[in-house]
Image 1 (cartoon, rainbow, N blue to C red):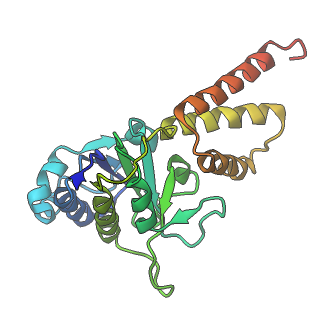
Image 2 (cartoon, rainbow, N blue to C red):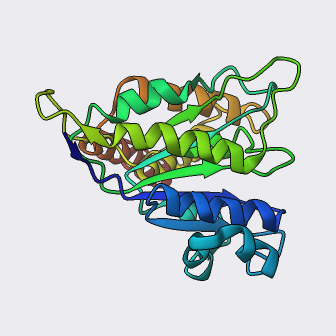
Image 3 (tube, helix red, strand yellow):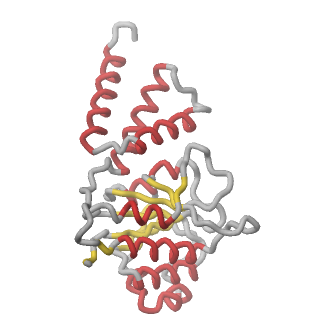
Length: 247
């Protein structure tokens, strides 16, 4: 048995509780996380309360990176996962258990840079924000009360991913070659703009249809090369639209 490098980055979106931030920093230390990243914090993440909760994880607070958007925070990541506990989740966003995602990750030889998005304490991540993720975690809880404390959710996810980082040398492991979150997101944006211009998409239904298109891309296990071919096609269509005599 050997440990596999996941280069794991925990990404918090607009956290509003310094105690949660401190607890998560401690968890980052427990599970040897590469980096703590925070998007537009709504609390003082460097407060004494946060650092007291962090204990030996204080270095994650001291060295955390702060971003203004999800795009900036995860665009160096090859693989992006997200958590969702909402019951009003779009039908186009499929959720999987932490155990299943952990097993899927363990099938790869190595993942260079993995980011996990954790949403706001009060409302999680929006359907549009979930478009950044390759896969979405859903932690099974009682139907009477589905919401988990943010730091508790982080602990469950990190525990499951820690299990996936142990490779069995006798397993036939695959090389990770999926299109990155950045490539998929930028491609979907370009496709959305093109289809809006052609009249296929309407503004009020564009997000739902693009979510379905993303679902197709992920189900096809699209590689970096394949997504670049798709973008090339879109660029050519846009060139034609821009240079058509009818325009």
